[in-house]
Length: 495
Image (cartoon, rainbow, N blue to C red; front, side):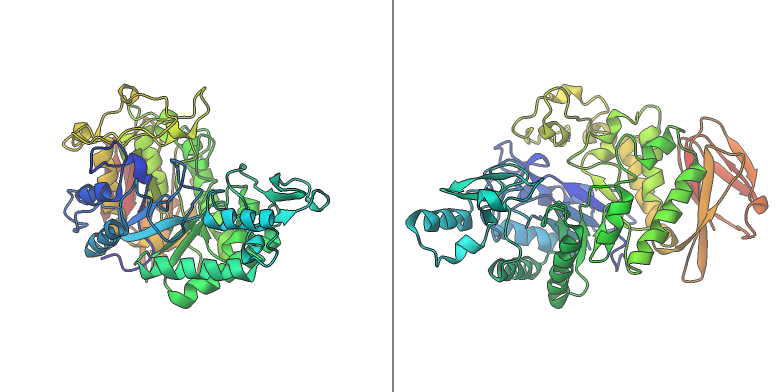
């Protein structure tokens, strides 16, 4: 039973996940239809992937395919279904002990949002008493701030829109806007969501981190006033040094782990040593806890804004398997990007479109879901196989993820414990750590090489291991007294 926020989340771009009505656009009913794939309600059944949280990318009405520019904060985009569909998803998820969080974009709206339309109408008619003139950041040319992007609004007025002209920035200093945000928070928590993923958290006040953190502290006070246990994670895509202050209001994704040059990829490729990776985990967590002792880390290797990991971590060479081991067998709440578990491919490419990173889930059955607008990849480029290809293949990447999540769940010390980093001097592709939770300690060890390793653990730790809790990877492992033998591209949990 998962009874806290140390879950395994699964990120879904709804429009490309599963189509229930044959219009080639993924929808909420499609997610409901696929819940048995994600979590069949029994984390020990071994039949489903076993995730215990869902992050839905934006679901609110929007003129774009990606929905990061809403026209209504309290509804479901009709392409994705109805509010009743969403309520049914929440009910079905609750029955399976799956928490659902949703993307919340409150830095800006769509330029088609009624608030923006009414602000423009007020300016054009000279209605200076209209409250909507206060909703957006409207300035004259002399009031523009260097480094920010502005677009013409009316006569001598310009509005701030740092992403593009179709996304006007909200005036978050306005009490009227903050009252709207409070209402939005209350609405969605009332619908049963467990929290929010916050988009672009360094942009409410562009490049003004102190003001941003002050705003997000206010935001979190409003969230916690409604639900003390609400789970919120921020997208602060920046260096670790700049991410750390944002742990004051909420948890943040660990971008240092992700992408081609992140710690997981570099460790799997043996560019960084496993010792270095373990040291990174320990130091980063220590730094985070100094900012917020209640913080939980959010490890991941890719998301909707990144080229898919299987493009630079080969499935055939077991690098995707080991990458999964490294970030899922760690402290905190890992996030899997939909399709990662089957090695889906997708990258911006020469066309430079993010749609290629958000391609249709490759089910391999009769699902009619199609690629989003702007995508240039055809499904025949998905060379690692579909869900249907992998689900009955004991050695598939999908079944690796399934077993990996079960191993993690069976050893709660991994996600929740206090870490002791071990330094295996002389080894570059072997390493690990101890994790202690409620007086119980496990050891997690990784071998990222293509050769078997035998090591006397008593030379590196005084902790005595008595059992092998499980191993996962390309090979196997054994423990005799304190002598561990671990096969190539394999991870092991000892107790």
